[in-house]
Image (cartoon, rainbow, N blue to C red; front, side):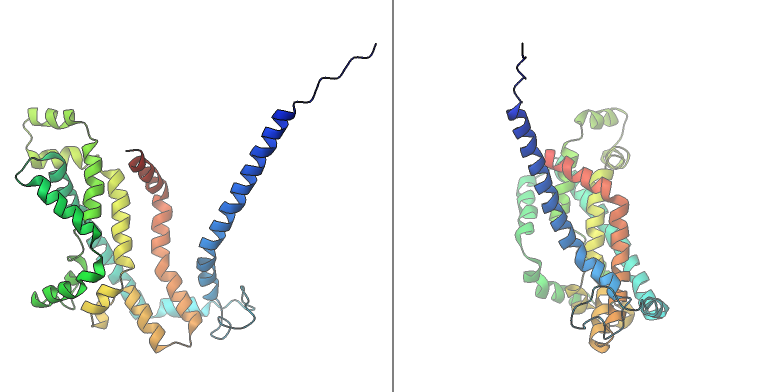
Length: 288
């Protein structure tokens, strides 16, 4: 007697096929976005190995016929470029430290202290987030001119240190810290300053990493404000140097691409070092 074979689980097979199609489609879309994001960076790095005519030759050729290391060697041997890189790095570190100090103190005050006109001041601080920076360039320039801050490191570091966005981000983190820790510190005789230094600062690594890198990138990539306030070549930041280099030596595109690659390297390295903390902290902020 013949035994009938069991029916195939068509629903299960159809569901698995749909899942695989969805996964493959998602992978293809993700790969397209990754390639679109990395292509300009990869082209800039490789263009640094090309000759001055090979960068803009037609038809387009991604890889050079002959890999020239001279562009990178020449730009690194330029004392003006290395000094500008070090000067920009020093300014970025100072700006980051100052920004985290000022904004974390303000965030602690708005998160934990009760004082007169607190809500009104908080509304004013948040409102500044909606004012485009370009609209206050002229008034800011007049202020720093009257303070005789032009052509100094201070004019690049101090004016932009306070940020409503950074205050808001750190304040939201401080609001999530249990008040029991603060109350225990008060019972031990700690004042507000010691509570901030001994309790809140050790716990502030997550927002400090995100906001610190944001401040570092903002200073490193700044261009409009420096060209308004700094005219001395000794005070130039790296973006000013590259802009001046492009205008003075417009035909040496391979050398320009090499300099741009080296200028972008510290930012990329910084992100690669802290990428896990950045992604984790952004996820945590989204959940809150």
